[in-house]
Length: 427
Ligand SMILES: [Fe+2]
Ligand SMILES: [Fe+2]
Image 1 (cartoon, rainbow, N blue to C red):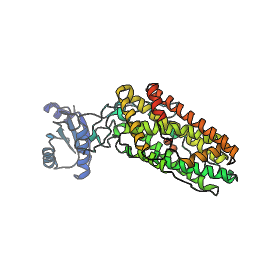
Image 2 (tube, rainbow, N blue to C red; image 1 turned 90 degrees about the vertical axis):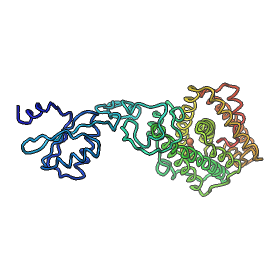
Image 3 (tube, protein in one colour; image 1 turned 30 degrees about the horizontal axis):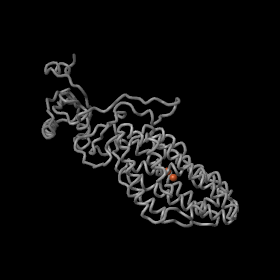
Image 4 (cartoon, rainbow, N blue to C red; image 1 turned 180 degrees about the vertical axis):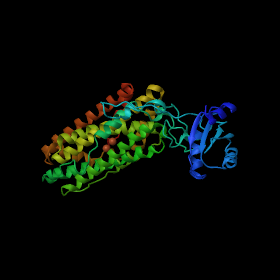
């Protein structure tokens, strides 16, 4: 037994943790390391601090008094000192995780769907609004200010498929500068070019709403549900890319942005002023973007050039994810609380009331453009064919809206009622 071990035996103390500070001078780093080591220590345990500095005992004692630690004693180890400090209280109530290794998916990837392990995987049903930006799983020091987030319940924001959609979104990112064959844009008839430009104008302005509305809610979401935030950040990136691609197509072939109707702006305004996230998700993602999926399919089918076709094809894949989040989110809430269905009916009715006061009930420029696109031109015969196809499109949109509402758990009568009163603007 050496001299030091003998001293420990005499005082009857076994330190629980050790902090070797060597000859580090007595200053800010010395105290920073000491404070952190004591923070990590459990209550009533003893930290052994090794220091080669002479004459620090008195200063260490007063530091301990100030910070409510118990300075137990100093042991003389010959060429250095061992200061024993006891932690009487516990400032951190929990201990962080250590030793959890995430599995590799397909042998070499770390996928967000696999990160629900340990404390990181412990998702609360209600997150305190004062949790701030502390990553879920980290241990928060007391004294965090109240960030006052508004959406603090898991059920308000969560969708079971949100991490699947996040991984898919990263896989399917595309670039509106380099992934579109801009150099393959042919000369097309002026009528068709006008129809494409009018449709692109309409698509772009609707995309503005799809960008702004989720963005408006994002900062209200408690960071405890960070996966939802991460997914929505891909969604708003998708929408900005759609805006970019649609505007580029409108001006790429010597046409230009065309008319914006008051019906469209009123319809989008009625979405924009919605301040309930659940209702907004239903109106925007399930009904609006759902209807847009059918519109994009129609444009892709009748596109007069490869550029238009490719843009709407890629946008449609993105929109599929947006609709999936809306369906997953709304269905999650209705499964937990079926009575919430009334809130969806109310939202659809209120919106309808707001829009029916506008005096206009169709976007005539868009309808004309869609007919020209499908008919192949502006002759009476072509318009006749075109308007028939537009009529068919509206029937398909109606039926698919009903299908999506059945998927989230609405009954058929309610679904049909909401679908038939849906805005003529589609979004
Ligand atoms: Fe979009
Ligand atoms: Fe979208």
